[in-house]
Image 1 (cartoon, rainbow, N blue to C red):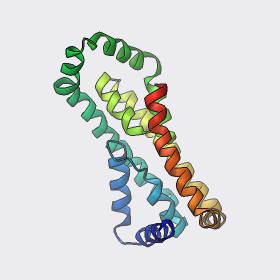
Image 2: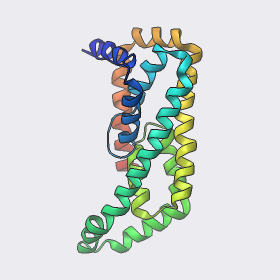
Image 3: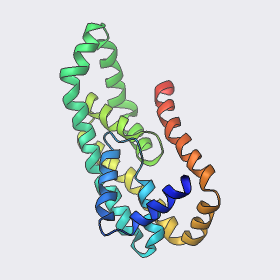
Length: 194
């Protein structure tokens, strides 16, 4: 099953609308979708290594646009949904203190960490909108973080494509489960450590 999924992704990577699909996945991943765009970026770069920078640029631009949507979700939904719930439970002050700490001390670092790692970036984009993190700085950190992530991955695939592809194909099953564990682990880390 994993091999069939892998082969299907490679087939999609060569499709004439693959660029649009890559951009779409990168966009929704930054705001609400659980799967990272790497699942398309990797086979697309391996299938056409000379266009590595093009694919990384699509991922970066679409992901930052998706981050704007995530920020808007946080900013707009808090007033009509989050705030009344917090007030009902008497936790509005506690949230205000957390928001102040997030905005002044570690919010930009959190956004950067989410942008470059397997931590769920969408949670940081939404929370940043909810707390009112400085939007210009949020965008700047998102561009740098997402750009680093996608350009480094794509460039390494460009440089070492055949060796990386052979490694992926040899260890496809364990790599699939490692990726799944990182995805789930990112959500667990957010829940228990932040």
